[in-house]
Image (cartoon, rainbow, N blue to C red; front, top):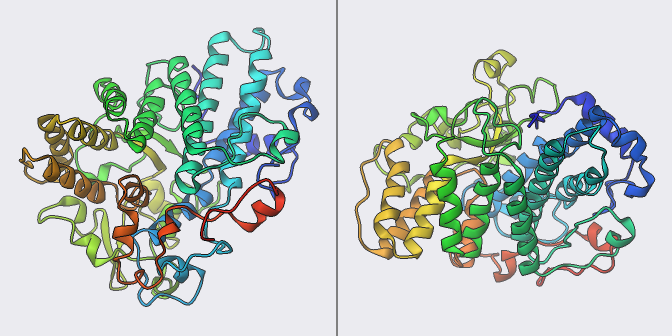
Length: 471
């Protein structure tokens, strides 16, 4: 398969925007309906098909959107604190004073734009003559689009619950679409990922994790989906396939995990913008690391003492300058290295992309799935793969509760500031208990915060939609 890079060129993105003239101001009305876009223009030559693919990737890999969503998750969970909390909408998120009009909640358009572009490819590519692209290319491009559609629906359903399940490009249908039950959305996600895995090759380009080009990427995300559903056997099977593929590695040294080209990266997303603030770095870096002391009081959240206390003595992940760094007297996550103060030369010396999926997560997924099925020795073995790379001794236990607690600790220590914590608390039924006990959230926390509010603009754009309870 020709690798179509998520690091799409700015030119390709502009071509796609020109071809897909439409408004993103309404939740699902993100482009003209398919029958108003000339297939003779878009799907009759390979270069324009690749431009359409890159347009989908550009929307999927938008670093500003990704970084803002991630930062909101730090604020909403117990991972990030600004003390004292500012009297702003950011402070409201941190202190659990949540309202539907808070502008820091992610926008649905961030997810439905790549979904729409994926749908356009899924609908149009089957009709493209084999004189334009081969049958193998056609199947693999459609598979990549199904992966993008599944991942974005997953991000929506895990945050908002029932959501519009958008599986076509019809504006007439989508402009008044209602919310689909969570179980039905999950069925569609699993179907897309399974079909994507079936049509993607098992060959991995180990020098480039920035393309959707192999079945293990779909299987790795499928393992996460099954974990969230509590489908333990399926989660173990999917994770094991990726682990046993031999295509990825637990790299030596925690500071090598997030380097560009890391063999631990299953899928990375690189920004398409070429300005210095994006080149060879991620927006997550400068959304996490403060550029000045003032930002530590208004914008950039520090790691709370409670999270730092989770690390055990000798844990290389918590060593100063590794995944934790002290700036302006506070501790910050340092997985993505560059604040806005970093120079172009510094970023070029150690380039990074945002890692959406990485190999270490698969061991933690499998450990939890095994523990839930009473394969305790297998679970402990997987836990120790992660602990040993962090410089820790083996964990030893034959108690299921103790092992599950150890897995939660390792997920906190290994995956902190990667967008997992809020969802981990939710899927394990502990979100309200844990967050209502956080001192700076306790006074405001409400039980209905396990779902995010639907933005008023979405409700105005589509009267068929309903608000989540409590908001």
